[in-house]
Image (cartoon, rainbow, N blue to C red; front, side, top):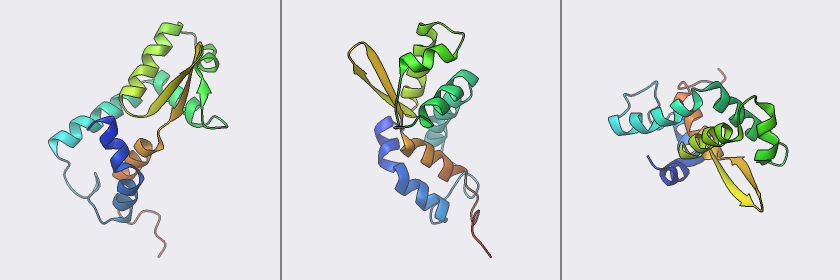
Length: 128
């Protein structure tokens, strides 16, 4: 699934799956193509540095953060941080924009919402 397809599925898809009208990972077997695409996203999340970067980006007041604020939080070189950010972008988890000499990053909530919907148990959160 491309980044554009993830955006198209977005919140409505996550809501539908969470509401139980569409199959989730826990209610129906996943197709081969969807599994391959989702594995790329989970692989991006499977690295501690990338997970921390995603958390720093997602929790930032104002919804975006400059790479100049991300790099000092790690004992890694700037090219290594840029590589990790590139993998998060390729997975459709974040996006960015260059402004002068700096690049600003923000979360793409459509992707994280979709992941949450896929992993939600049917009826979870419903009150009896």
